[in-house]
Amino acid sequence: MRITRRRLIAIFAMVVIGVALGIGARALFVSSQMMSSSSLPSGGFGEVAIGGPFALVDHNDKPRTDGEFRGRLMLVAFGYTFCPDVCPLDLQLMGDALAILGPDGDKVQPIFISVDPARDTPAV
Image 1 (spheres, rainbow, N blue to C red):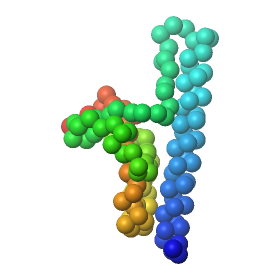
Image 2: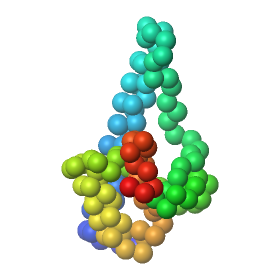
Image 3: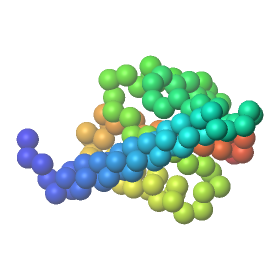
Image 4: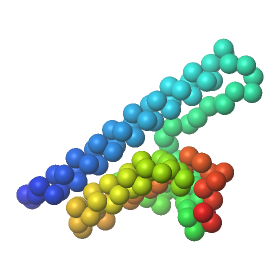
């Protein structure tokens, strides 16, 4: 199979997004480790679990789990609906990458996870 320029660009975009998410997750992990250290007073932020199984609610108020996406690649982005610039750009890049992949894009499940669940309700 010959890799076209468009597919190469899509793969590159997905790798860049993946690396950015990995760096963000690592920063979050390190931050959570520092916040849960014994030097913090009681009532701190607690611990954050990174990776592994998840159970979330989608935009239609339907429960969704990682098990539904087994066998597919997941392209995960984190953000919030009141994000004015970066979040819409990330979602546009994800959509463009999937469009460039064409039929191969059907093997990838894009997932946007809110980091502001108090405001990002299914109704919003």
